Image (cartoon, rainbow, N blue to C red):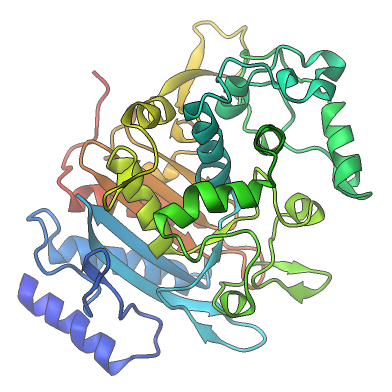
Length: 415
């Protein structure tokens, strides 16, 4: 099928099925609507066949029960090449079709979009340094030999902290929870081993609050999301936003829609450094564009270029036990994954040593490639309705297809 014929077929589908959840708000340039869901002047590599495959693999995942729905955005050189909504944002107790403006519980995408962003803002302002020990700002954290844990260790997940502490630590409220987190023991000496840790980012969120004197959500809203025009990004949603939110799992036999899924974030009141944030693909595309443009968006500078380089530069992290010879290392940045077991969204073609991204437990992911000025945003509600969906294979397939669409043809090799 030729390019023009395929674009016409997509357009006709949108007209014929206006309530199917497929985007009627796609944009040839962000901020300017285009009804087809695909930019008109595509790069030569973004063939109809490649873009059809994106449709096909997402619909296949839905048909196989791996997710109830999805929204996929592909940004390239500050333009939105592709945007589409699939399936349902809610299936029980009644069906609500997915729409392009659906909000999603981002889960661990909170770590880069809120927490590490806030840390980098405070670093840029001179209020923090990555080499600072946590105890400089939170003295109680020194308990059980944690006095040498630095902000860098927490950002890279090499602090030695446990992945998640027991839920009972949160049962008596936030004050008690922070006391128990401060008394946690390390599993490894700081810097010796990469272990993905929600607790580490809870601590980073706490540092933001202690240094800024503001709740984490208030600081991020004023310093980050409002300046970027991210109008649907926040921890606590309005009633209208909740109705536009994709459902996740259940709590107390009740489907969660517009309420955080992560139990620790919920027990902390919904605001935490590791999870709790909600957003849309549109808002996240603005965030990604800012990163790819070196900290600036639409004439407004949020970060200096050097801050973005510091934030997104890959750094080696030790994988496995230190006694392994030769040692095995992965790559992380200050808040992003590069090359570890969590890198499925990179696919098979984006560079393993330069592109970066993150995933969220609820089925969300971002992946950015500065070399081609590309960002892939995949938001799914894989936990709805039975918490059994698995979108890891889908992330990998979409990452490969996105790379093909922007010109990658051979697997990226390290020099």
